[in-house]
Image 1 (tube, chains in turn red, purple):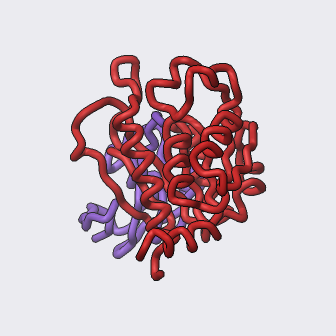
Image 2 (spheres, chains in turn red, cyan):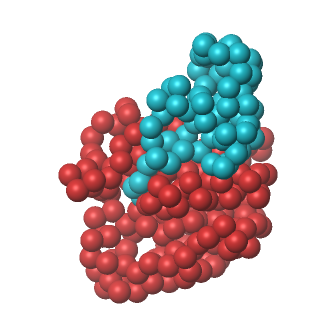
Length: 194
Length: 67
C-alpha cells in the first residue's frame, strides 16, 4: 500500500487517546504524522518540567493543560488532523460518552488503577472497539523484553512487568517505543484487510 | 483439567475452580489484574462466581503503573 492509499483510509478514522502523558502524547503525534482524520484526546493534567523527560511538550508549555498543548503541537505537525481536546478526569461514565464513536482507543494512563478501570469499562461497555494498552514502560535498555500480544479486542504493548519506582523512572526511549508500538497497532487494526 | 492460560497450555490440578481460586493457585499476587474467560471480561467482583472448566481459555493481565 502506498502512503497515499494509507492516508486515504486513515483520514476517515477517529482514534481515542485516553491520557496525554508519555504514552498519549507520543502515540498521538505518530498518528497525526500518518494522517489520522480525528483524534479525541482526554486528560485533566497540566504540563510540568518533570514531564519533559518523555512527553511531547516544550518548555514554553509548562503550566498549560496537556490536551490543549498537545492540540497546538499536532496542529504544527499536521493541520489536517481534527483534535477534540477534553480537559477532564476520565471515569467509567465519561469514557463511554467521549470515546463511543472511536474506531480504536489507545489507553495511555500512567496509573495501574486507571488502566484497570478503562480496560474493564471498554471491554464491558464497548466490547466491539479495539483497545490498545501500554503495560510496562519504565527503565532503560533491555529492548527484547518489550513485547506485544492480543487478547481478543485487547492489544497489549510493553514488557508487562517493569513498574515505575524512584530508581526505575519512565524515560523517553522506552516510553516512546511503547507509545509508537501502540500507534503502530492502531495502524495495523485500521488497515487490516485493506 | 487442561486450560489455556495467557496463550500457554497448562494442566491444573482441579476439575473446576473459580477465577479467584485460579489466581490464588497460580500465585498471581499483583494487586491489580484484569481477567477474561473465553474472551469475556470477568470483572473483579465476579471472580468468586465465574467458574473455569476443562478447555477454557483464560487471560490474566497484570496492571503496571507507568506511561
